[in-house]
Length: 79
Image 1 (cartoon, helix red, strand yellow):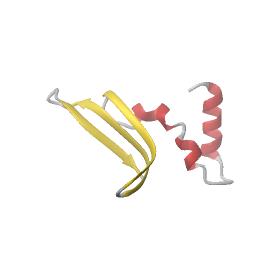
Image 2: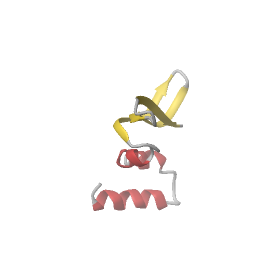
Image 3: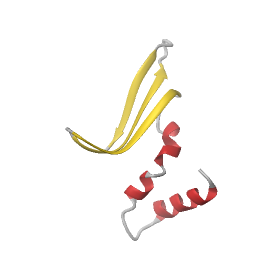
Image 4: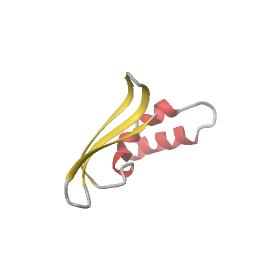
């Protein structure tokens, strides 16, 4: 994220004039690595997914190493 993008993100986060969740979501891919509690080997993300169960705002899927050194697929979903 460059300085101009960060300034725009910060402005959206601090805005009290309107709801800016959708606009803020465009910047979340920059934080994907911080939103996973483990260090991912690979990660993917999706925004605004409509599915059989309803709507989700942001999804991160990742391949991580477990404590037993096995690869595991995980997903973190925000709705």
